[in-house]
Length: 187
Image 1 (tube, rainbow, N blue to C red):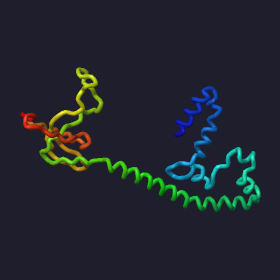
Image 2: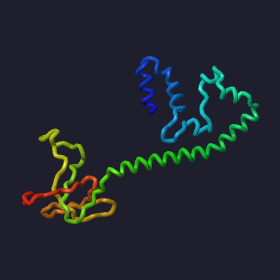
Image 3: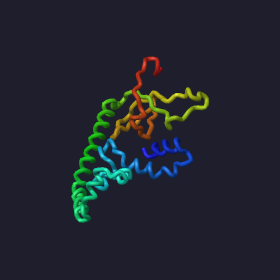
Image 4: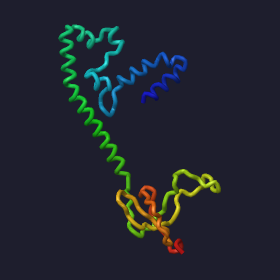
């Protein structure tokens, strides 16, 4: 996020970006985050940051704080810091709720792959993205078919060639997909 803000400033002012860096940092620190519902400044100090413009214009918030004596102001800041733990917990709950919502949205679209012994599967050609120079961009990404020889814990499987040679190295289920064969495929 900070990189995007800085990129926008540098794009608009390519020669003055170093002078405007402090303004970008200030905007980043006072920007209210969606995940927490508050600014990082508030979570650190217990109150919103006072903008330089508010001091020169004498906003109501600044005028209200200037009426305090130093002892009263210190006492008010301590009260805000005591309430800060509660505000941080609320922000933490918001983060957990947003992560839970994101996880349920993601998990709704995920279909778990489970294979049984003797199922026919295709295996991804690893490393993913490797290309055969003979085929170029038309290189196959799956090879097989293989037969599931053994199901291991954690979604790993040991596979074997259809004709019998067992692969000793287990493979994760995310690199396998079900193979639907016809009677001519296996000879």
